[in-house]
Image (cartoon, rainbow, N blue to C red; front, side):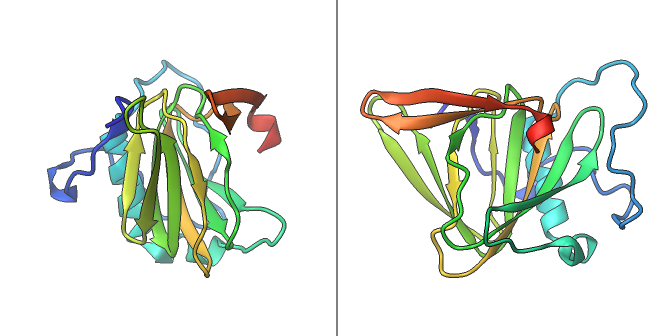
Length: 190
């Protein structure tokens, strides 16, 4: 197992802050709170709990989902000092390409549909391909690089949490010698 990947843990064994303190609505504030002392990042397991709980409450976000044939559609749902949560929809064939999370820890839950995740497992494992069906949550550490894609025949909807909130993302090409960094983007591109 990759040192940055956190194994799946039953939900009853996780203890984390609840990201659903207030219901989401079109009027919910989606900007960070007023600046004050920095918070310690949430753990990958805590982030997994956040996305899993939110995925189990579609009435909080389903009305926001849009499908786009041009590219994946996304909207930030929560922006706190210590974490953020994004809602993303995927049509068949849409993918992220290999990317990191700028040093943030993360987790994602598939709420509807099914995705595929690609990552490098190390010299003895090579390329790992995982099927990620609805109801599954994945969590990872700050150095994790992966490619997430919809290879199914229907749309998918996911929830993603990052801590600290994303400040950058680097993109990579997979070549014979491994991953090669090709570009970086910041929040102004999201």
